[in-house]
Length: 488
Picture 1: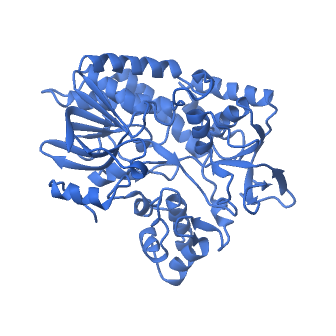
Picture 2 (picture 1 turned 45 degrees about the vertical axis):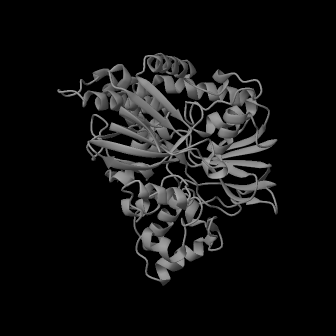
Picture 3 (picture 1 turned 180 degrees about the vertical axis):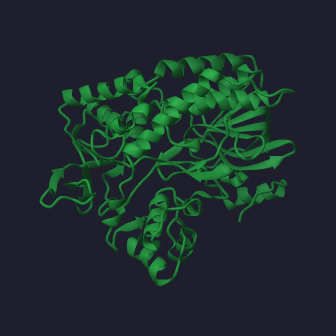
């Protein structure tokens, strides 16, 4: 088993991870950037592989100049021996080792499909987790039809492969992320039939204090609105998809207008023909590794399970910091600032004195965190989306568990929390391990139990003793070399 020994290991090469690595290296630490991606940038700055069509990054990315500048500075530090980037390294386990941490990785773009070279163990005195997030999904009738995908999935196809997933697209859900997705699809040739926003257009106006210090966000929003207008894309507020139609593929969606009470207005239903539906209900933080280590969590304003951190971005576990979406979904600008603070703090803790605080970064973080909280309040996941799910609506596609089976586990079998529902009805026990169905199942369980969703409900689907797929042979080998992995 090959290995790398560094001062600071940063897991993730998105905005938070790159900023953390740069801050740590510039503070004098030797840094490893451990990332599953082949190229840096994460989901936000994802770009196509070399030779994939004609691509102008600035048409799909905000902050591309900042990204390239950061990568160039890291490359200079790599030449000086201060940074090593371990691309295509899938961390499946993190355990204490000596006075630091051991990260056990599978190597390769798709190791579960094509095998892997000798696994790699990275040991580090300090650890920064910048593991990002993935699309949050809410079931509805027809969501398992071919042609229905997440908003993030549509953008990944476009950014990573310059593939437009269909000719006529509907983008639906809630939150500002819908706008860049629709804009990108329209720019690259799709006919965007509609953008359906579940909430009204003036939600942020109720939070004027949160808008101070984030004037640049208005410029972004205005740019998207202007381009959507130019492409003649209608944006319909307080509209949701009620069901997707089709037999072996998507042919259209039935949409309805929500009243202020959340109910669908009588007579508002209409059909929109489309061959692709991109649905976005926000994001769920990726917490596998942090929960392996026992880091404390909390329920955020958007009902996400997130890591609790202090002013230095330190978690409850000594020697572990976190930044970006894992500490609360807030976008690339906030992730970058948090990464800078976490990286500097992690590197500073290696010395004799306390780390020096960056007051400007901390002020910027407060402003961006206020703005993120305002977004969560203005664009919440509507409770009525799950209320409308009939018993036959599939919730867990891997195990083919319907809403009725979740209801029966709670009201018929006496399950009082999501972990028991998982054991009785098997949602979250398939290939995705609850990444797709976990949030929705936790919320539906709470609804049937007559209470709010809790930290325990969300942890039932977020905790995984193995964070990336690996073979039983690799697992056995990890025990043979003395790894202390909790398979529990």
